[in-house]
Length: 150
Image (cartoon, rainbow, N blue to C red):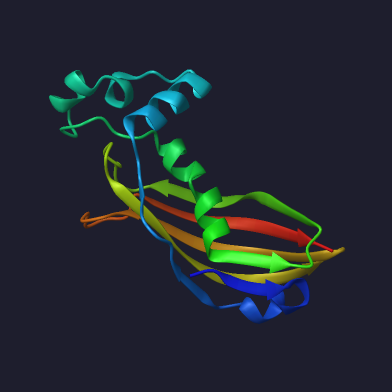
């Protein structure tokens, strides 16, 4: 469920758990497209036959592909009205805890840990966890920074 707040209401999100997104399936064609875009064609990602006999028993998504899905997931969780500009400001910490097998369904949870006033707007610090359905460990754990300007 999307939380919608105005730019002026952002400080009230400090400490708020925004919950989980819906699941999205990671498909082989998505992995292949990412491999083409990044020139990372390692066989554990793009060769399903060889990867089936590899360490993960299937092809896996690139860690950075899984991380990049934070963008649509984040949009699913938070909408800020009255913000003229919205910027992914960076990442303070990222860990790729466990692989995401092709065909897995993943989702993200986010908690706003801090809201800081900046010139012209606010910066949010957000703890994010991406998990694959049925897996014991998360796939990605990250602390992201977002800026919203009037």
